[in-house]
Image (cartoon, rainbow, N blue to C red; front, side, top):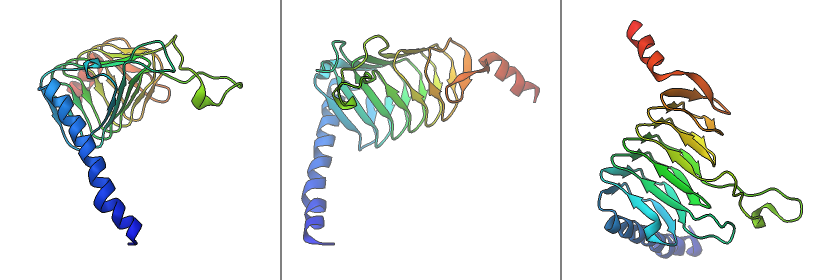
Length: 202
């Protein structure tokens, strides 16, 4: 290890970790029902744009961006996580240019991405400089939804209560309640009640 690498380890990394830890403490102070498995990276402009209920668990190495205002969109961002929701490790939540709402008793596995807005498409500017789309924004997940590992939910989607999304799926459209969806893009597999009946027979 050379001197530059040693400097990064001894100075920069502890400072960066401390900043993440301090932001996490600030979030917990305003939302005392939150349980964080450190480290969790937070990026937000207004702490009031974040509302978290009681007994909420967020797994380690998750990254959460909440921007109530953005130069790329007129639509405010925000994050709501209701009581007893669990979010697994390495989650990627982008609540900017739209709001992300996660209902009570939701179970979200590891490496899930929830993206509230998309960049526009044009040949006149680089993609990174384009304003975000404002027609399909936000994600609303109703209560008692189970989202499997590695799922991506795209902007404008509403997921009905008690529904299940299989691991690795990409959700591009809204999902009614009490249904199981899987695939890329996600499609309906069966109703939740049918799944229970099948398991009882087997």
